[in-house]
Length: 132
Image (cartoon, rainbow, N blue to C red; front, side, top):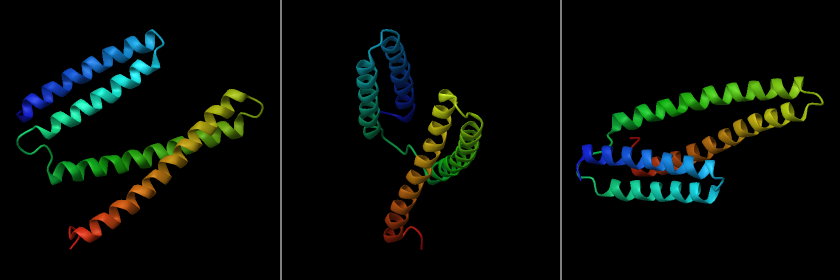
């Protein structure tokens, strides 16, 4: 499979997955949506192993790492600020309290996940000789 045919196949899989998930949500069948997501994920992973040629290079990995770090910074700051604002101004309002807690806890989870992945990849890359 060539790189272009892989891209077209992945776009078709994503469109089909979106349609099936939309039908599953409309008919209130969350199991179908989950199964469709997992099946599409597995199918794309399987097809990725069959592609001849290079799919990613170091520049793509570097750019995606920078973009992910920027998203982490923006989401972390904005969700924490919005969550704290909603918690402090929503005295007695259960909806504002729930949304504020959701935002602050999601920011906390994102920070913990980032720290865990950072520690993991720091140890992994240190031993591989990539940082010499």
